[in-house]
Image (cartoon, rainbow, N blue to C red; front, side, top):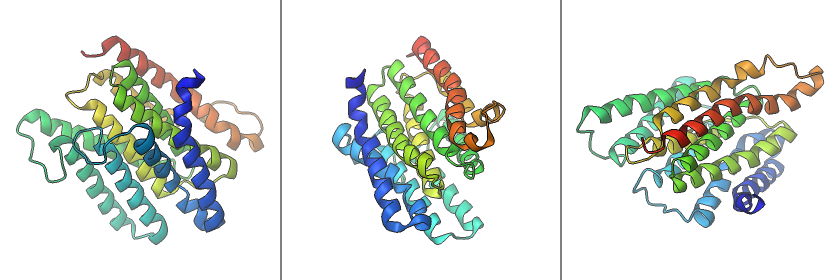
Length: 278
């Protein structure tokens, strides 16, 4: 087991180390905002040295890194410039539409779908994007809750990919989960704020992996993927769990959230195994 997990210490370690350096160099306030880029650094390091994946977006998997870069870049600019909310919403819509269109048509300037199924996928993907980004934005002020949700979603996508025989996509999902875990560890300890870079970058990367698994050529079960929709709402149950003294709640709550989110993740993994290729 240790040998299987060892490669994923690359994205975990890179994200953890770069988050610490950025936090130290940029100071308490700005450092908390820019440190979210460490997730991208960890994922990109794994993409290049561990996954050996292409940087040219030629298929659903190779587009994941580009969607992730776009999300982190936009979120980072939002954290530094803080534009008007109307501008932020407009830019996020364009980012989501571009990401989904590239997944459907094969490129930002790809042709429109020539069948109803393609347009239906476009609508479903956009709804999922709107739902997850909106949900992450809602829990953004709750400390590491958004990070935990992204981490559990990435882990769930990795399990679905593994159980479905989509090894390359599963490895990318696990690397993303490891990078998220690296930043989560430091933000948990130092109580770092979860900025827009984390929300848009982490959420966008998770959704990019999900679209790769949902691609028609994938063997992943649509039922298994749909079960992960429950993960972003796990905080509703986690908040009802008695966690002891109030002083300990901020430290214990992320563990409770992981435990509750583990239920739909495990159910999705079992479903993926049972319905792989169907």
